[in-house]
Length: 98
Image (tube, rainbow, N blue to C red):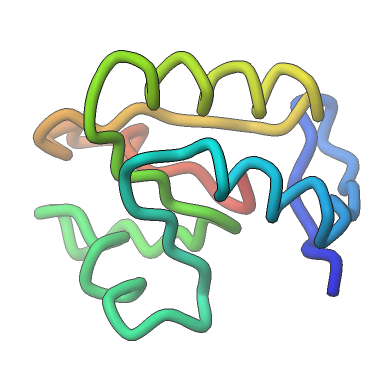
């Protein structure tokens, strides 16, 4: 089953199940999709006015995971955001569809 993602140009792209599985196999941390139990809790930021739904949440376990996540986003030209503490008043710590 493929999954829809938002591209950096505003369009959307379906990423194949094979590409997602390959990414997951190489990733040491946790990957969360909207179907996962922890997804809603994990995507929330302290500013409750922000309600964005990323297509995939990557919880990196180290530098190698960060590099893999950035490479995956670059390869598929999908929107990505980095959440340190999630303390951006404008809600930029969570992207929509990326």
